[in-house]
Each structure stands twice: as C-alpha cells, then as structure tokens.
Amino acid sequence: MDNSTNLTDSFLVDKYVKGCEKSLELLINKHKFKIYNFIYSKVLNKDNAEDLFQETFIKVIRTLKRGVYNEEGKFLPWVMRIAHNLVIDFFRKNKRFPSFDKNESYDVFQLIQDDNPSAERILIDRQILNDLQKIIIKLPEDQKEVLDMRLYKEMSFKEISEITGVSINTALGRMRYAIINLRKLITENNITLSA
Image (cartoon, rainbow, N blue to C red; front, side):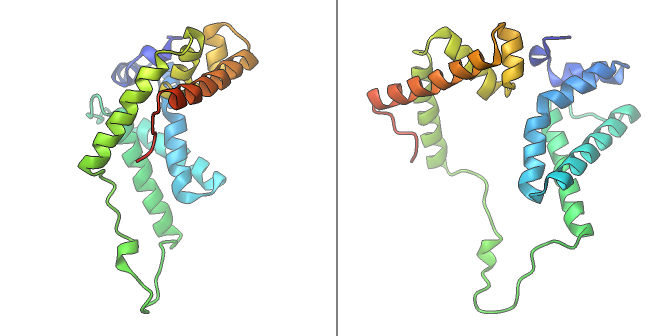
C-alpha cells in the first residue's frame, strides 16, 4: 500500500472498515492538508485548528467503526462537512459568533455571500485552465512531474524526493525552475491569468 496516491478513498475506507489500520493513516495523510487548512481558515488559531482536526477524525473513526458510513465516493466532502459542523459548534460553545450593533453602519449584505461562481467566472476559469495546460505541456518532464505532484496531488517535497529518487533540494529546484519557465511561457504566449 505504499503507492497511496493511486488508491481511491472508497478502497481505503473499505480496507479500514475490514480492519486495516494503515488505510486510515493513508486517508488522513491524503487529505490532512486540505482539511486542516479549511479548519484553520475559520478559527485562525493553530491549537484550536489542531484540536478540531483531531475531533474531526475521531468522529470519522466512530462512524466508520459503527458501519454507518454510506457516502461512497464522497469521503472528502463528508469529512469536510464534519469539520464544518465542528467549527460551528466551536464558535457556539465559545460564543464567538460575530455580533453587530444596531446602528446605521450595520449592513446585512456583509454577512451574505454567494460562493457559487457566475457563468462568466466559470468560462473565464476554464479558459485560464485550458491555457495553462497548454503551456505546462511545454515544460521539461522532470519539472512537469514535480509540478503535478506538488499542485495536483498535494504531496510534500519530502514525498516527491522519495518517489522521484532525488534530494529534496533537487525537487525544490525543479519546482522553482518550473515556475520560472511557466512565467516565461505565460509572457511569450500572451496569456492573462486573471479576469
């Protein structure tokens, strides 16, 4: 099970439920960056974020052990929902919800957010992604490999160095050169990365 990046969440959940403790470790390692950063972005405190991260996985473990998990193929969104609910509970317990004075400067629209992108934003994002994919193809293979592992598979440079068989400094150097080359290619191809 060393090649955990190729294992699906469903496969790892199934193995864990059947008694393979290592599968849970692989699941946590696979998603910890995204889940922890989500929690931290809400509570803005390292200790609280770490506590909530641990609470999240305690709930995950209890649910899996009871055999009531049934969100096949949607493990990460399910865990994120657990984390989100724990963050809300955290603020409720600590009475840390934002409060507002009833004065003329109070604006209800400050609280309302629409996180759904507009059709125009979706089209622009698609075009930017399309343009980026075209220039990433032009990078040398070793730079493309590191870029893919770091950005799309969210691997650490230590993991990248172990998988590619190079030192961490070499992996960092390849990433640096990939970014430098991408900047050159963006300029040469007249690509705009923002709307």
